[in-house]
Image (cartoon, rainbow, N blue to C red):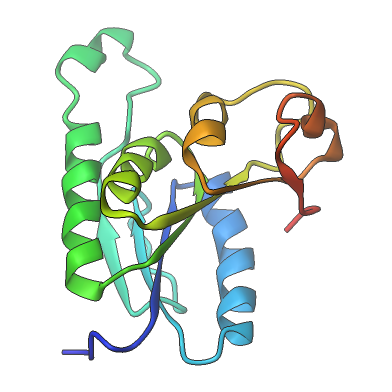
Length: 162
């Protein structure tokens, strides 16, 4: 078992484009943060090579069945998973590229005084994402990858594309 003194970041992302973004960001970030290790939480079954431990969770919502919201345990599953991971690894910072799974994670972070950094997707140019609308208010730092999104999120930080 690894030491709880080792500084760790929790990376939260969804499959597809969110996973692609995180696989660009995390290895570069970890290289610069000498001594930090990564823990990941995702609905993507594939464990990245750059992570110490990978936790699998369910989706935040089913995009194909609107009525499934009534029986969806995804948000609760994500909330409990983040709670467990934060305590087990003494997480102080969560970095997320979304999608909706970032929302229950941010709620846990706020309750436990864990800093949350959200990076709004590179596929958005002129419209809000569901997670972006909410994470803009929950995240301690909110980055956008397209400069045009600064009109929608005026307090965001433009980071450029990953």
